[in-house]
Image (cartoon, rainbow, N blue to C red; front, side):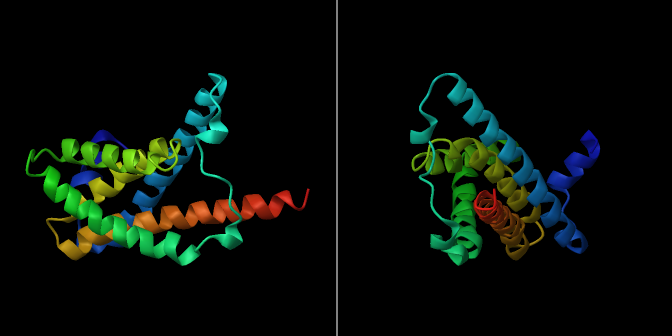
Length: 172
């Protein structure tokens, strides 16, 4: 993806490309988030930190509320993201700054529960914020969808990874 096409992707929303946007945003949010979490885990672990205390306690996938994680949380968090972006926009109109502040705030919020979540969450919410900002000129509905759909796909991917990781460990 060249610099010009990346700029187009971040800024130029076209209603006929909404589904494509969401699918691309899903991967742009998910893959670097996973890499950031793995890297931060390795760095903290290598530095001698007790990473077990920095990550969420393990829970069986069967005990998780899948619908809450996959659908309800992304919708609620997207509505709060929109409110946060509106608030940040009072102080600056620069989209990049708005997205960065939003991402850092969401990363910090998630880190207050589980510190290692900061890294992946901050990146994902940067992507969700950029999606919201790119699609807001088209409509509020598109803006909310451009943040919520990739968010739901990222959460669903995390649930699937957790499911397959736990089910395959029983096979070995």
